[in-house]
Length: 61
Image 1 (cartoon, helix red, strand yellow):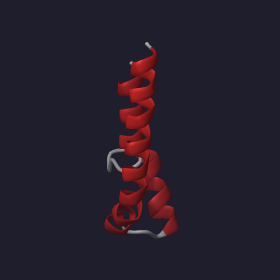
Image 2: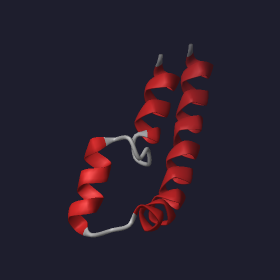
Image 3: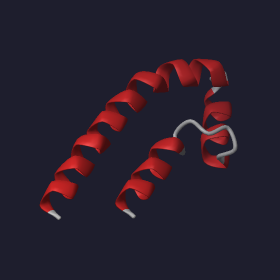
């Protein structure tokens, strides 16, 4: 359950079907391709952090 929750949360930052993401970047005047280029390094950092935390959780279980 934890892995799915983190994966879904991370994916919601970049999905173009998310109304919050699309409305927010539209109001800010940012194109979607620029948003992806901005978010990609942050997504990698979040993915690595999630993998580390999942590894710790699995080791403690």
